Length: 174
Image (cartoon, rainbow, N blue to C red; front, side):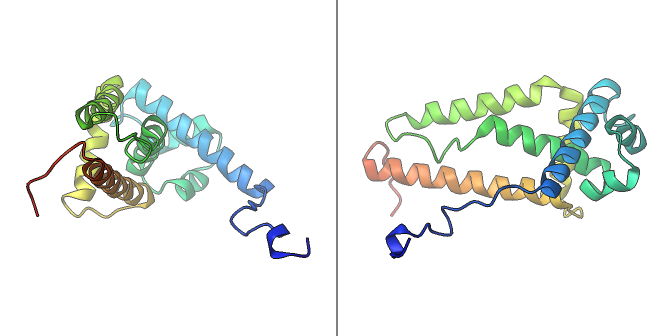
């Protein structure tokens, strides 16, 4: 590997995930799945962080290191679920697919997700609205939700621009 061409770029080399990071990811998953189970079984209001920590087999301190509030636990679930459900809906979309079809597919995924557990979904929407619209203090998962919203808006804007440039949609604006 004497030439620059033979040297792997920094971007091409991804370091392996270390033991500590894998342990953190495993604990996060335990906590998230325990919270999901307790929220779905007992409802968000009746669920307690103590019960979630016991179900995840972690201390309360460990639970709070991953999610400082019960609302953050709920948003952790929602963020991970929506990320898995949505993927890169707008970024990966072909320009040949009609815009209305793209928007309907996106909406169907969202409505289907929120309809699975309406009581928990209602509470998640309250938490999200509190953060996004009412200036409620935001934890890391609320901030992540807001960033995902901005990413989706930017992705939709880029898709519309690609479709406009391809001539599949027209605008009357300048």
